[in-house]
Length: 305
Image (cartoon, rainbow, N blue to C red):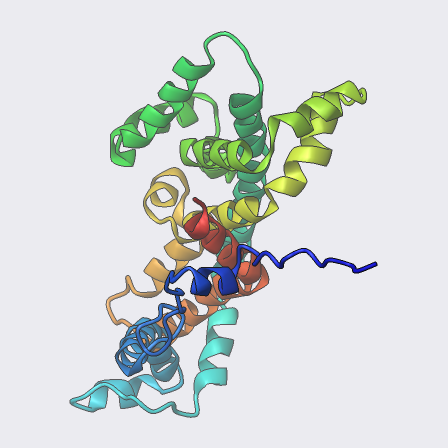
C-alpha cells in the first residue's frame, strides 16, 4: 500500500516571501544607523564635554595657586599649582563656612526627602484615586508653576515672619517641603508605571491606601523619585536669593558663605574658588550615587511610545 506524502506548504516566513517574489527587507547597516555615531558626533560630544568641565577644572587650577601668582600674570593660569591643600585648609579653618555647609546639608537633604515622599503621595492620589474635584485641584497645582518665584517673595517673607520662622532653617525648609513640579511629575510617573489592575489587586487582598502606596507605588516609581530627589537637592543647595532674605549672614547657607568670601575690600580668588570646589563636591557625590537611576529614568522617558 503506497503512502502518499502531503505536499509541503511553505511557511509564511522569509522563504515564502522570496518564492512569491516579495523583496526582503534587509536592515540598514553602516554609518547611517542611529546606534553608530560618526566622527562628527564624537567631536561635538567632546567639545560639549570640555566646555562643561572647563569651569570646574579652572576653579581647581586657581584654587591650587597662591593669590600673588594668580594676579601677577596677564593670562589666567591653566596648569594646576601646589597650594590646593593649603587653600582648602584655609577654607575649613573658617567656622562660618563649616556652619554654612552643615546648614545646606540639612536644608537640601530635608527638602529632597520630603519632596519625594509628599509628591509621590500626592501623585498617587491624583493618578489612582477617584474623588470629587480631582481635576480642578490638579489644574490649580499646575497653574502655580507659571507664577514667577520673585512675585511670591514678599508674601512669603511676611508669612515666615508672622510664623516666627525668620532667621531659622525652617524658613527655608517649610516652604519647600513639596513642589508643584514634583507633584505633577510623580503623578505622571504613577499613571504610566502603575497599572490600575495592580492597585485593585492590592486593595482586594486587603491592603489599605498607605500599604498599597508603600508596596505597590513606591517600587514602581523609584527611578523617577531618584531623579526628583537629585534635582530638588541641587536646587536647594544652589539657592541663593531666598536664603539671603530669610537668614542672617552668620547663619546662612554655603552660597551665602561663598558670597561673603568674595565680598571684602580685597578678594582672595584662591580662597574663594577653593570654597567653590568644596561646595561643588556634595552635588557631584549625590549625582554619582544616583547616576544610574537618573540615566535610566531619562532613557525610560525617551523610549516610551
